[in-house]
Length: 402
Image 1 (cartoon, rainbow, N blue to C red):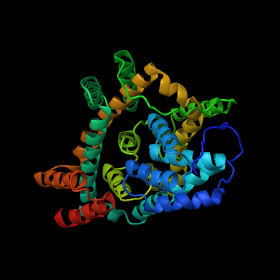
Image 2: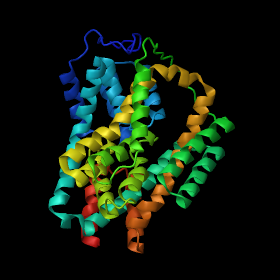
Image 3: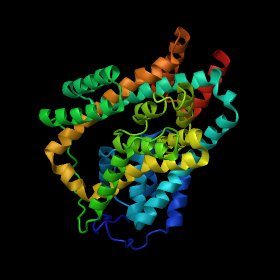
Image 4: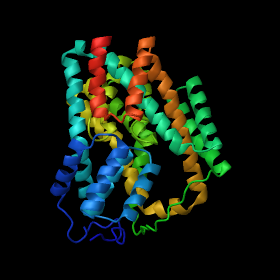
């Protein structure tokens, strides 16, 4: 029987009666981490089937509000939903168990791929890399299409998206990406963009100061992440990945331009290697943010992979713990919701700019490549071919064709 999981103080260290042990939560999410192909939208469907319908950890309405909150926060939404479910079941230990189980398989596989390229650099060259790079073009194009339809349903929001893309294609520095999203949020507030209000009644009382502590830690680490550090060091990896995890709205695909700016534009990694890792990440189960393990592994082996994964997921985790008690305010405050609608439209523009540079410009250089991308996009958008089939298929096709 489902219960009102939010009726108690969320800052309490006590677990609900009948709550599972952390190791049990870890095993449940490990199974999902091994089998959840298809990206964030598919992950949310798997979570709903497992924890709402099958196990009845919480009601449909409570789950809907958890998803809504996590989509409004920076970071990987599906991972944030997963750790929130673990938190509601067993507090902070449950959240850690859920995140680790869901993230471990893909992070481990991406680290092994990075180490393999380090031992055999020639493996990162050739037609299979070309095939993966062209596959990434189709994936990002599909993400722009889907997010644009959802987040830019009217003229004002579509205009914000286009203007953000134009600005970033003209001045593509990281600081301009942050400024563009802030401007998009301000435009949304000024225009009072409409946003559908949830009919749910989830409320979480704030009875301690712990949410403010989480937010203070988040903000303090973000300020430290902007301190200049020598490229290639573990501290530099931490800073690059923490900034990306803290400032990315929209999930896995949107992190691409931020990471490209930090790892490719800075000269720390060739564009071919970067896009090859991103292509392989598409075929992995679990969160796309596990791509960070590849970036850290290329730079600094196992230590770099661990630092990168923790850094990119930590800010979203801190914001979840800080934001849960504030959800009722965000949901009911019209100006805040309008600003968030503007930020979401700006995210579409951010991804549109990334679709051209670096994704398209570094992968497409012939009519055959364009044909390849078109076929891959049709396979994704119309024929619904799973990405875990299409990614290795694209690599094989590239090996034969290019």
